[in-house]
Image 1: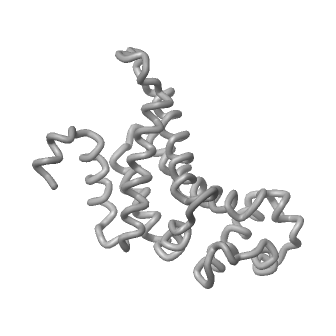
Image 2 (image 1 turned 135 degrees about the vertical axis):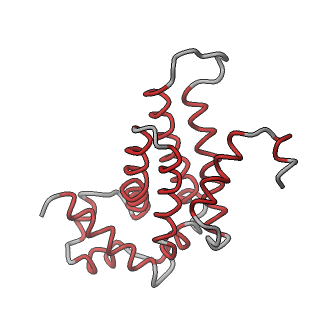
Length: 184
């Protein structure tokens, strides 16, 4: 079976288990048993279940978002991001509870940070106005803001529609604190 198929099979197995029990209690054996593969197969693809969660986030969310970004479709990318998370609401509600060393928030920030930094490296016009404000720092800032909005939305139950959340993120990152005093 091709590598992509095995990874997808393990991801599907893990996502099913995540709906049944706390993430922390899911074992590699349970994931592989449900997927119908041997344990060593898991370790040929992932170090642990947390790397698998990050793979799911990258595959389901970040790869399509980056494709949209690369085509300068920023609004569509943000809407897609929130829509995909909402479509898998129960799974993301469970993983959003991960705290500490393997927190979901850190995974989100890392994935978004890499993606935004790559976007800036591709499309930045090269007129760095402030030496301290590097592409990496700008990417990290955008990733922190996006991960905050996303995690807060997930944890609050995802009641607002994806289009509204995309607009909220866009507004918050394009306006000053003074502008926010008019809106909140």
